[in-house]
Length: 129
Ligand code: HEC
Image (cartoon, rainbow, N blue to C red; front, side, top):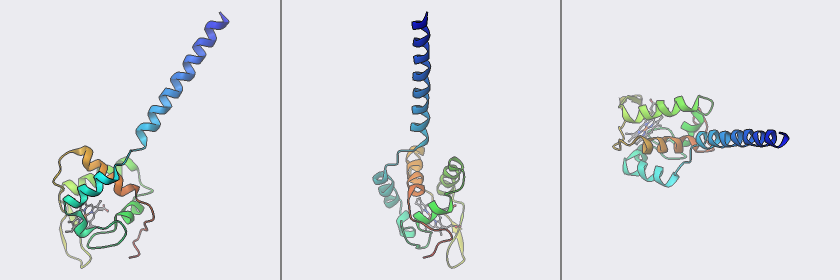
């Protein structure tokens, strides 16, 4: 009897730790930085963006700073929409044009690119350079 109870307790402990492992492994996105950078390069994103300085568009690390206190899942959705819908983008000289639409349709690759941008450290918002 006693032995049986211990077995079921052990089972509960195992179930909880497996559950936790699952939660932790799905919440932290494993960014493939090389894939993200080469996707950005192939799509001409780096003509207007750099990791650490403002070109026509904000530095990627500053975009990470802009959204760091926002709901992460919502931000990923919003930014995927930003690079797939051709919404209006404001340029430094004040004119507006449709933002570049990424050529790749694969949501996993789009997500990896956005997660990479959001993972970049050292940015500031509002931007300083
Ligand atoms: C022709 C120049 C240009 C190109 C090419 C370009 N962008 Fe942008 N991007 C901008 C500008 C300008 C903004 C600022 C838009 C604004 O604040 O209204 C911007 C903003 C962004 C943002 C931030 C949006 C936000 O809500 O803060 C992301 C993310 C982004 N671009 C990603 C990309 C990716 C990925 C690519 C390649 C597929 C790309 N951009 C290509 C000019 C460009």
